[in-house]
Amino acid sequence: MFIRNESFKLFIKLYPVTAIILAVDLFIYLLFLVTGTWHIAPEFALRMFLFSAGSNDAILNQGAWWQIITPIFLHIHFSHILFNAFSLFIFGPALEVMLGKWRYATAFLATGMIANIAALFLEPAGFSHYGASGALFGLLGIYIFLVIFRRETLSRQDQTVVFVIVLISLISSFIGADIDVMGHLIGFLSGLILAPLFFLNKTN
Image (cartoon, rainbow, N blue to C red; front, side, top):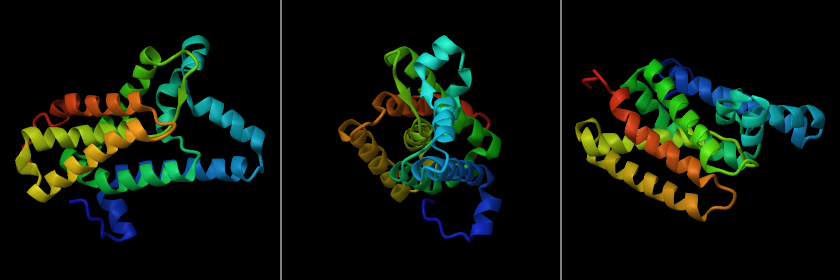
């Protein structure tokens, strides 16, 4: 389930939503790399960051409500995009198949947005954030729902993999530097709680 050995063309055909999210994430990262890190257009990079990053002050005081969504696709550090893209590449496809592309896309965006909305109420006014971690933890929350309530959908080996990855991910959220712990937790819980809705009327 979590081993990816498809060709590039087959991956895009089988998992179009995952492929689109990965492509958007990579495109935005490369845009920041070229304009910001390489100092080709640093002012443009700064403006784009201020427009896209989730800033509580900008959302609440300047009406930048699009920043509930845009941070989900924003990564400016190589280690950040590498970890999140790899996690989506491994764990996204199986859920896309089980849920179908529209429910899967909704699950990804909804859990990421809920994590970002929570930041408005649980973090200081000057708090800002970016990255797909809230949405990715939302997917992990959905997997935990499957392990607990629909175990027939996962093999024992896959259940073990899910538990180990979730445990490691949650622990690393508390010990890593500059990590949005609240976003990870809220994303995870939203996936776990909303999972029954995503699987409503799904028989397999």
